[in-house]
Image 1 (cartoon, rainbow, N blue to C red):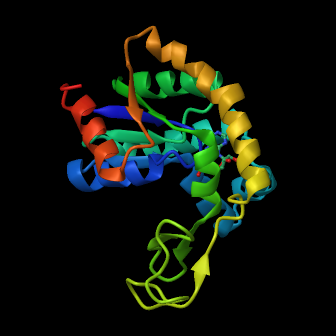
Image 2: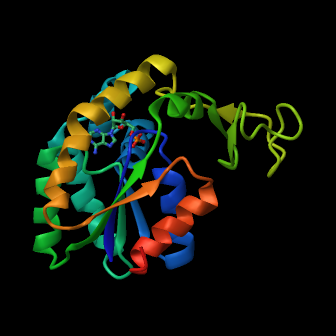
Length: 216
Ligand code: AMP
């Protein structure tokens, strides 16, 4: 079963995708993660994407569609969760072609509905352990001991360079202007379900499970 998780930055797409990976053996295809890996590796795509990502703008449709195409075949059996893709109408159409070519089709598009102001606080406070990637938040989930990871005891932490307020606001504006308008494309096919992204994490997971199990 292939699904799309849609929602502005910080809506919880990554967290919920990870839960679906753990509970259902699905494969998470996050264009943001792919681009960050390309930036770290210094590939030509990474070099092109870095400044655009740091500004909170969208990388070209051709680049992200090609990345998705490359990764899609890994997820042949269990189903894919598209996280952060598609973000434009062109990408939505490119995804249809990529799936069609492989004899696959979308089962669900799940929109995480959220309050944007709350998201700014959610995103600008988040950080991870540089050693084991355990996720934390300045206000909602600080480390138990200051500057020490609860999981591995590490003392180094990382923040995404695009998690500052100005970039977050640009990322939200990009979502409103270019991504939210693709919903009707999927609504016309009866694929869209809405989930309350402001609910507690477990409740969001429960609502997503209900959609996937046909109980919503
Ligand atoms: P994310 O991790 O999904 O928040 O993505 C981080 C950044 O990567 C975005 O702000 C964009 O600059 C870029 N990006 C990720 N996915 C896409 C996409 N599907 N289309 C264009 N740019 C993307």
